Image 1 (cartoon, one colour):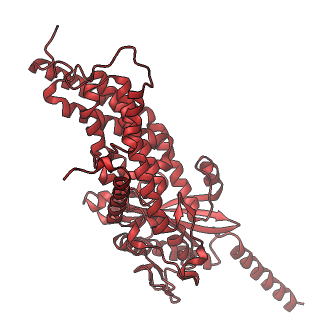
Image 2 (cartoon, rainbow over the protein chains, first blue to last red):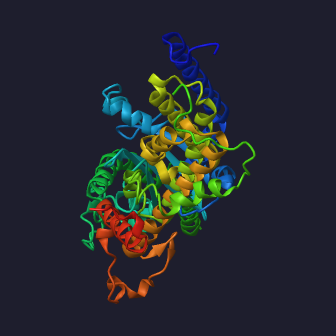
Image 3 (tube, rainbow over the protein chains, first blue to last red):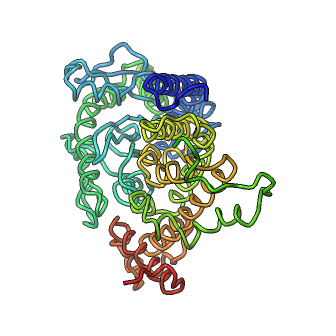
Length: 274
Length: 226
């Protein structure tokens, strides 16, 4: 017997070696697989954005489709004004946590917007983030170019209860959002209310929650109201810009209409002169 | 632990799948099942059996951790100092579980999302520590691997059965495939309701209880003498 394995000396040495070996192994594996992991997260984000536009793609095909559909990304501040920033790289979940922890002030928060083009129509994809029962919940809603009608939505979560709160990530919860409006006819902001599960609501500004997933549903309700209120301010400026004929940025039907008005006047003018 | 007092004196010429080694796998499936007889790992059986798929992924992760952990600890059994052996086992278990978590996230991201936080909780699964301490510390590498395999399979089949019962009665599907036709549901004008109680954790305990009941009524040697 060369050594006594129960001696204090060997116990210490063994403990140190074991911890160092296990720690190194984990660190090496983690760093080695980090690029794959980050790429998965990036592609999943693209997948989620596309899912809110009702485009289902495999994770591997997501980057190509994302580049094809998303025409413009921008960042707005709390009052809906466009500010500097990279929308895709902005980690809204981290920002939300920092804000909750008091590390970021409310007026410093930034909100990404993705402008997509589907079948020739402009759609706005708006990221959401909030808190469920066990941890963060997030999602994306897409609005059509009237700035108030929901086109599609997708939600996800970190660890909501499977079979209960986790159901927010299923079509049964997501589909009823379609066609709901975030403002009433007069333009006053209403947000989207998530009612108690099974309420069979007919509210144009509300959907049914998850039975047994009350806290998660309340979390979705809170994040919808809080973030859509911010985005509503931005969307109102966009809709106003679309309605104003002078703006050269607008495309499609509106620019066509401006032209036709011009043609009309010249014709009328030429009819009058002779 | 200076001499292998707990280890059975294995004959050197023993075959890889001798009767004794086969018993290491078959025993935990029934007579010495980790959940129904040893009553270990109950917590995870309650938490992740709402859907069969989660149960399967959890079972596979536990299988990897128990088998590899058993082998590592068995290989180190003559080196691990007696006074810190539980901590040493825990470090190895935690290391392997974290490794599984990292690998799942990198290569099977969707699966890793489904089992979510529960992968980390494998560390607290008593089956791990139970097998490491009770078997791997006193046996050679190969029997330890078989013991790990047997116990995790014993764990797996209970999890899957509970998962099937709960998903079928609670959501009307198995592995995400619809079994109860949509048209039977009361909301679609039918007569059927999902049993919402089945998706709550306590029902898993009751189902495990029923499995124990059936098992003991068929396998009388499990009944304790009063």
